[in-house]
Image (cartoon, rainbow over all chains, first blue to last red; front, side, top):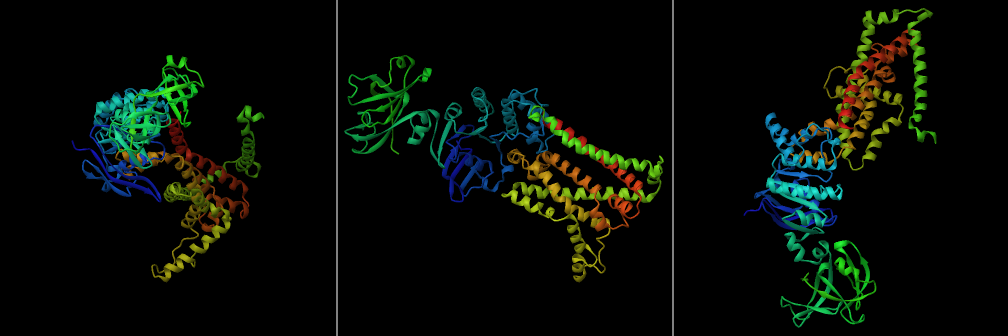
Length: 349
Length: 274
């Protein structure tokens, strides 16, 4: 199927700063794609280039096969929900949502009908006459969404729109956004730095780091098969241990055990092994100073996500392990433990 | 600290000033109703019956309206670009700098430019664009030019104060919804900046209505505005009661003329914030 949007070697520099560095990717029609990454990684810049608010300094952007560089922002069939929503303060809810239709000089009854439908879709059916300042945070969110969707854009861009909301509201709106996207079938490109948010809403996630995309895959793949150390560390919690290939196994010096090498790597190669905290198994060590041991430095009780923070006996490397509440009760600070690796990912980069 | 408990107490000094002003004004107004010590409405009657006085008032209103209009026309684009300039503060300083020079000196400067043998007329005569010098002084044209020059920064500051507070993303939001730059201006930027424009018009209009120096220096005493007329009455004709009557009429007319703006501004404020 032809992608709705193609980025072809896109670059954006601000003077000497390379904000976006040679990015190429496709966006499928109707998918929920998230740009995930820390502050300053280029994800918002990329989003703004798709919207048309920034010019590219290199490469091309194609929408339905057509080069966007010749089309100015207000002519692109691309909508955007801004970080601070940017609702028009001098207009009512109805007028805000109707704006996209009013500027196209649609007939009044058409506008009335479409706005009514849209407000119904976001659960704000009776709020048409209210002014923006009379709405709560969650309600403003929905107005911003309705406003951008009423023009039926090909792609809707969302720039960290849930950042200003409290946790519970955010969770609720994440689910609503997801449902809304499925119902309208509009392609969404969502920008966030919150990896849990990305994981729960997206069809695919593009992990950004310093102007590059480290990996673009489904949430499941990103989590279980991170392509790079950055992805492994940014999404979820990982322990990164250096390993050396020897005799069909990868030796982990820090904890004195080894894991099988299923890829048949070259003898002597040095790799990084990423182990998620929930895949670190702990069992009491018979001898605290024996190799394969790590010592508990700190215990964190947090219900299901209780953690043990350890240091490897041999090298002092820090490890984190998730322990069940039942296990946690039997652990003590200073205790020596044996470490068992349940699942792992080998990173070649 | 007493005023922390009740901030309204801070208004007392201001009320003191207003009180002093009211006292002074009432004292002057009194003399207009009691010329020669006897109650008489003759002066006011002559305002209504004699055309000269009506002309003066009408001229004052016209000049003030034209001045306000030009200040908006020239001041709005200026404020718009200043709001987006990278060093707004520096630009603002440059804009305000003429105010550091005395208004009398500046107006004299205009006389050098606008006079019959001034810079403009000399140039256009030399270039052959006109045959006779264009009268730009000692008429309302000169006064309008002078007043606009003096009051433009006032208008710019009023509009600027609203524009800098406006969210930049609003323009982008309008664009993302398909509005052309013109539509964005008409439907979003202009309505939002309107309170600033109202403030500016209010101030410029009222100052222009009561202006004295510029109408005298650039308008002369043959076609006076209320300000220059009052000056003439007091310092040349020594007719204090009539001067006072002019002041009273000016106050009333000015107030009546700005009521529409005040009402709409209040309506907007009620609508746009809780």
